[in-house]
Length: 69
Image (cartoon, rainbow, N blue to C red; front, side, top):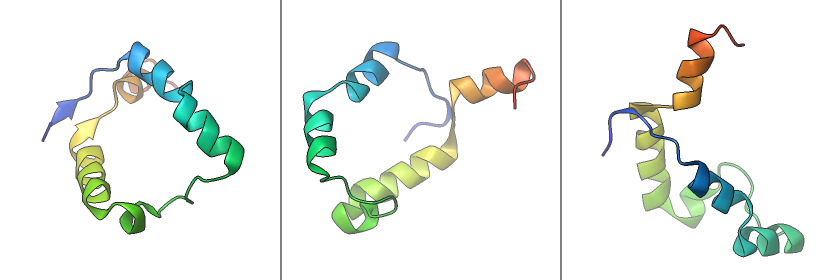
């Protein structure tokens, strides 16, 4: 498990937003509602919850440094 600052990957974030799998899921309306991760995949949901609480987003640090909202 990682602790500290996450290193952003522009390539990965762009790939995630433009993937064919994502477009198909959204066009057919097959996306589960927020919070349903515990039902669909509890192991991944638990990992993601711990990961989110033990790491810091790089962009949120920049926001704090330069006085963003």
